[in-house]
Image 1 (cartoon, helix red, strand yellow):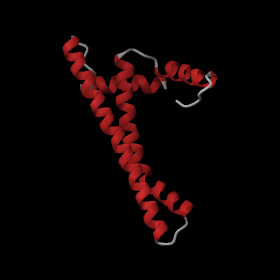
Image 2: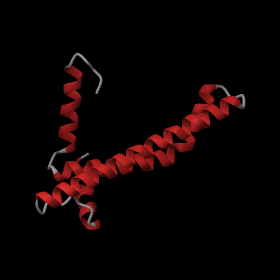
Image 3: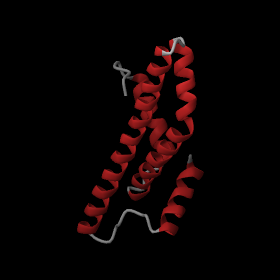
Length: 122
């Protein structure tokens, strides 16, 4: 994860896609813009899921059993949903880098917090 975060930081810098840290006004605008872009990408993940569910229903109506239909549908969206999830990850990494948060440390600490609490839902 550390290598991924370093790669993303350099890539975003090279592309001019970093979240602005010039001043409060520019940072605020950049943070909000990147948050909106992240939510757009999350919505695109939802669109891929909807495609899979609709395809599953269509295949079931054609006589395929539900498990086989869903397996085919999952395979049909695999590449596109992977791209959308990668877009989401890229935006998340921007936030980690902007706030100078170590992704790996933060992730493992959060998972441990979930492990020991009574309510296990994230």
